[in-house]
Length: 255
Image 1: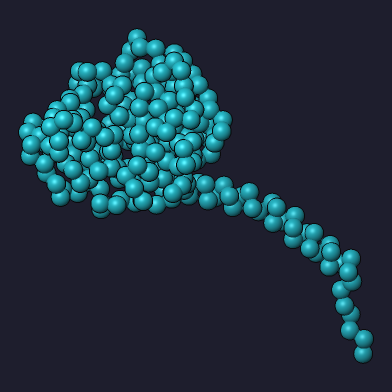
Image 2 (image 1 turned 90 degrees about the vertical axis):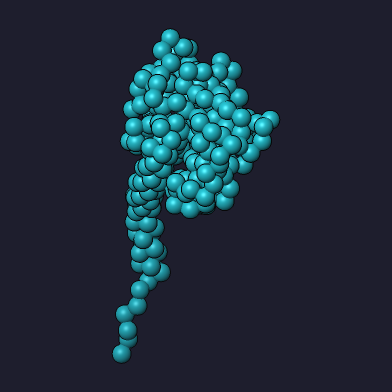
């Protein structure tokens, strides 16, 4: 009895159909993964926002920004908790994040994908460009020659527009960076290690996630949106904000 077998042409047709279907499904799967990472990121930032709120509740609305003259919000909020009224009393050991190596401090869609060092995590706006009435610099509890810095959140006019931490990227090492300094600069430097003029990356499709002083988390889509948040706190100030809409493609807006 002769058994019916597939011909070579029939096999090639089946393979072609499978390839077409795979080509149609892979982008959809990629979007599902991107959506899941975006939701995971928003949840992480919500946990970080809660840590900020707990710190402010404990220290009369002051929020630590930099410790021992280093823009290092992860260590500052989690392991080196300082009393803004008596900086020689360091409340070490108070943990506001989940652990000393908090995974919620890292966006799941950006390298290094997990907590490895306090330098690689969500970027956080530093104290260097904030008006003097919004910040408090005091001698450090760790070194008399350095300072610890705080936001005086009681004088902020628009907490729902005051972003704190979120999706950032550095061209140095192609990683997240925890520092977000001088973003109101007229001369953006796209290769600066501190990414001083590159405040965020649209890490989740067309937006990047940020948390705000009032505790909410929001997707930010453009440099213009970012500038509007800055101007809510610093009206009348010219802002230049550069955003990585994707790796290698910055977008700059001045208002």
